[in-house]
Length: 215
Image (cartoon, rainbow, N blue to C red):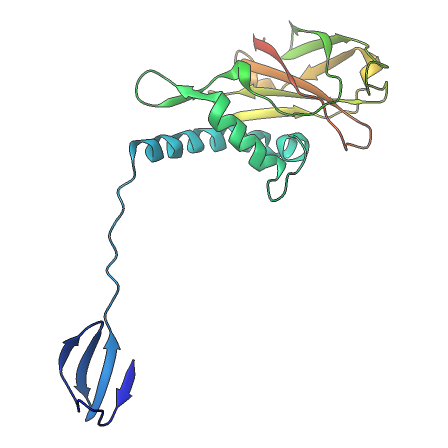
């Protein structure tokens, strides 16, 4: 807002161009016109992207502690979590056939990297909500070392919950016992596993071990 005394036009009332002239408390005052704001209607593509983003973020939240550390290398201003979100939106989130979107559990990754992953992994359900995980020792292949650490995740999608196992089990152990909370007995769990180096500076691309029903 600006005030003026007597310009070449003197005082004025009303709109001139992009300003409005009024007399306020004996002073000639000029104010700029308010900017009109049109509500933008999102396109169908924008709506789809927002839905995909929401589904991706909701799924990632329970495994954020793993993904935010081990999903690729930070690129410019993109954190591992940013990279994971982009991957999930384009590769993991799929149409559910009813106008919404769902997660393709087989495409889910909890980590992404160049380290050698699990060789010949297998998961077997045991009593008391336990899953026995086994693999072959591939230490020495590429950058794989016997001291690489196992990280496993069990995801119950119907509950939006995940259980993460970081118990210090090493690559050359070739086996791990995953004990889930008792309340998860009878639930379907999607299993994922990966290796990270002892320093946690590098990770493998995780593997999907399938879905099991806890007993």
